Length: 155
Length: 303
Image 1 (tube, rainbow over the protein chains, first blue to last red):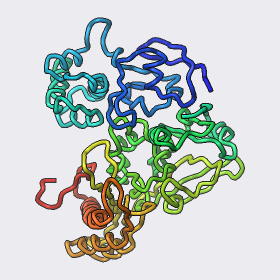
Image 2: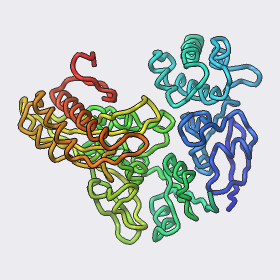
Image 3: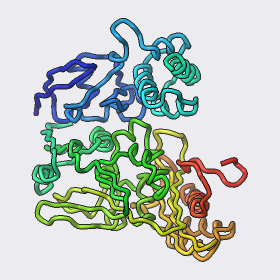
Image 4: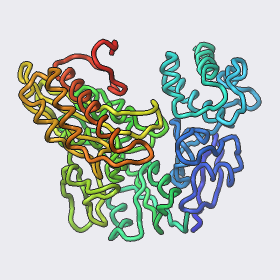
């Protein structure tokens, strides 16, 4: 059964028609067409699908799209200011925190949400904040370095 | 997934009317359990009633007894100073659920009604003597102790058409302390291999009251009468803690599954119950002990 709804993503209102059991991840990728958010495990384990709903990180693969109506959704595409990367995105590039890139959108969302709540985190706090985001390339050291560098740059 | 009609309720009355007699309908709060289960083969019914916009179910009132609206999230619980200081075992549990993304959407109501014997908050709610308030359109409210609510894996004694509106945790006598400890293979996105919660009250150095409950070693969360008897009347000394371990292992009825086999669970539940009681006693004495208490190490570890 299709339901007409409006999803607010990165400050834009998108009219969509969604099945009652559509996930937010599928709505963002398939209906809205923003493919920065990745499908990883599709089982609420890996964090590749992470987006912010009203400023808080959420695994979009296990969130019903229609529950997000009336909320502000932020995807990785919403973190940059036009062509200008955020300090966090630049730090990921500078520190080598990106290898295959598949986990990167979710990592960036988690890292942005962390600095929003805690602008000066310890490395342990960074690692805890990113513990729901799995990366099979980097071993996490360079990602943690990047988040620490971004925190310093924006302090 | 199938053909599903989606409804959003903004009041409890509206939710109850949408739920009706409870047939062909599922209530969704955060969705983190429901959607995973739907993908795993337990398909969603024809109607989903979303309750996440019901503001009245978001309240967290710690001014006397603790009243947690069904939509209070794990993140809310961990952030509450009152819960951390008074109902500490619950904070220990919510702090280690999934990842921050899970804790932002996962609710106490969803946790309780999903009735997993491996749920983190279950054993703490049992040792803290919590009750669930179930509301129905026809019958008004009824209060059910959580121990009587959970009847099997994924099963509760809630009747069709009943909605959990809040969870009430009584205030505690002075010189009480509690803890929840989980055995885990990894720090995040983990499900308990086994877990244990303990709540104790002291008179001087002596434990005068104790409750111990066990996670993931039976079809429901289990009380351990043997572990409780082993610590009551003692000072929580090493001999008492060894008896707690033996008692918890004896009361456990674990199964073998992909996370651990029966023998390993039975051996480890003793170790974990001992650690939970030890931390609860230390907190009851007024010692600072970090939240979450998992991972917890014994004396000499620096924690």
